[in-house]
Length: 381
Ligand SMILES: NC(=O)c1ccc[n+]([C@@H]2O[C@H](COP(=O)([O-])OP(=O)(O)OC[C@H]3O[C@@H](n4cnc5c(N)ncnc54)[C@H](O)[C@@H]3O)[C@@H](O)[C@H]2O)c1
Image 1: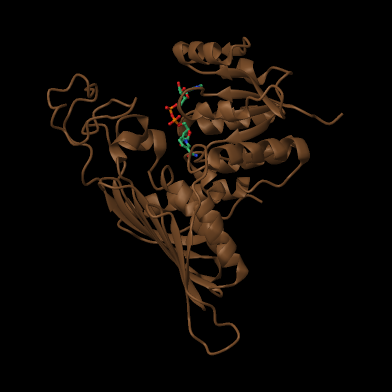
Image 2 (image 1 turned 90 degrees about the horizontal axis):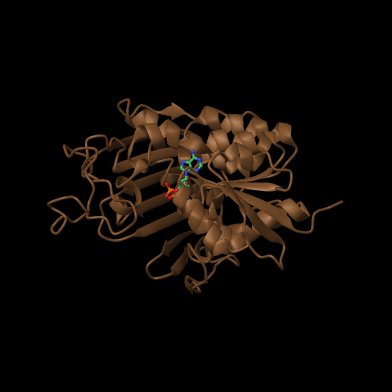
């Protein structure tokens, strides 16, 4: 009998685990019935807000063993994704796996292989594919208005980089491999999605230019004597000192890519800019498209050919949408439910998750080895 309501369990309920609120709709098509986390207080807070006595456990294996759960959302830290996603798939659950799919190429391939064996459905948390500003760009590119795509330039100013990445676990290679596949997995995926091609070869330069340093690893912002004057004092729940010794992921990096079909792309990611902005330019044989996130605008410029193909240059104002990440979070959650209940093909497909991690891992390898180009290994199937 086909399902009419999807019963979801969450692994990692704080932080990104807050997605549960989009899925929990007892009168609707999905309901969140349980959660696993290693912090009892987060599970307590979930039970209080949920009100309907959901199942909670400190051991994720008890969650995925439950026969009354159809799907698992993996919203734990990056270094847990492989273990949690593979175990859930092997238990016959549908899986929503947050980005990055895992922190290694081999880990991604193990997730893909588990998915293929399972016969269940898998998607990744690429919510940028669901943001209005990038959907508009995708639609224009697909209309053929800028011709055949030949180049992509992406600049990512990660303002408040310390709040997002340097005050907690994200700041070490052991936990994240590189911010090119952590933060950058979204942008690398958008380069792939907008051009319609995956990275074949990449080279990169980068270093740790601002964060890290000689502060003790156990120093926190509330306990720091410099907290009143430090530009990076934590404004979030993440409070480890961002100038601590263990920090070793690069904060200033640039990668170049050759995509399938010979498309050239470059991606610059800097974590100590005062402002937050993702600036995308895609160039085709007949024109160019560019966005501004702060201005919520997309511009299209086309070449003059004196033919019927001539189009006006134009600007699009993007409508603000309700919900987290520019309105993308409720929509990606709905896509997951429709994938599981209706068999719909999701926008955020598993292969895309693997290919963006693979590009980021290869770029990190390159920049840690003098910038030599690295070929991206093909996916397992
Ligand atoms: N798509 C997006 O826009 C987006 C945004 C933010 C975060 N993320 C991703 O979501 C994931 C979580 O990020 P976050 O910022 O919420 O991290 P976080 O560290 O704040 O929260 C992770 C949660 O997982 C729990 N956890 C940690 N280890 C666990 C384990 N072994 N078993 C079960 N639970 C465990 C933590 O206690 C916490 O509740 C990351 O992979 C991140 O990349 C995606």
